[in-house]
Image 1 (cartoon, rainbow, N blue to C red):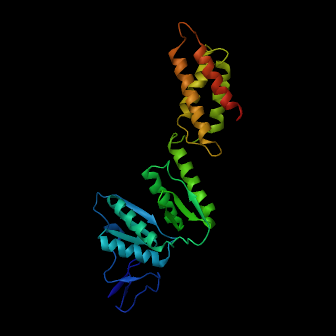
Image 2 (cartoon, rainbow, N blue to C red; image 1 turned 30 degrees about the vertical axis):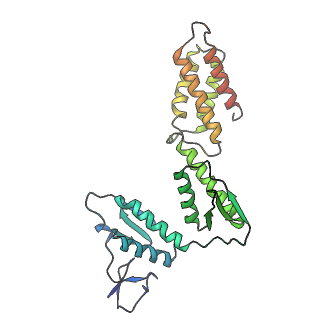
Image 3 (tube, helix red, strand yellow; image 1 turned 120 degrees about the vertical axis):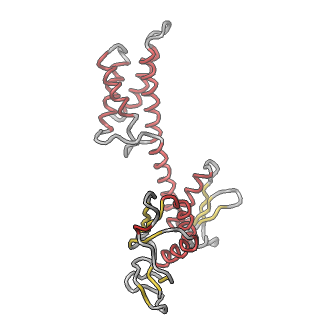
Length: 268
């Protein structure tokens, strides 16, 4: 007997493909999803709806070869969370096997990766594999892709930059509108630049500052601006907490308020 690794349907040994799922058959039945891992083991789900039958067949073979516990719910793969790294390697291996070779007879585009660390380079390669973009790394460590794929590769780098920008800011604050927080910062800093003893302005600024440091980078805002704005807001807060200088008085707080207000003005 042989079995479909997705639905578990049994077939005679001469049947190589499941008539229902279209994927290959294997000489042992698949594991049920509830049997993956022990009672205390966390599970992970990988979605392979966009993968071809051949790619899923290759992944199934790799997982069996490595002896990794797994189950399929249609094109969704269930594995133990503890096996995530090994499963990722198996996925990468299948993607690499299907990736076309870079056609060196066609025009190419070179991307310098000198400013990227090893983890960032690995992320780039992983994205290119997922997108099925042929590529290679030259002797100088630069990424080489076909000119026809330039737009798609640019999109990969843009996604990585945006993701990195999101990670360096706050976790997000549901129900809070970023524009309203920035408006409160602008109005309070505008008042504080003229009078750092304005109690209401100090209170409004403290509330807005507590919110803005929790916000993730909102859509439509530049990451460099957002970092500069947060730094300016932190500087004003520190100056207000420190209080007047014995020699210079409130100059530090006033200047910090001006800097913050000027940064925010173009968004008001």
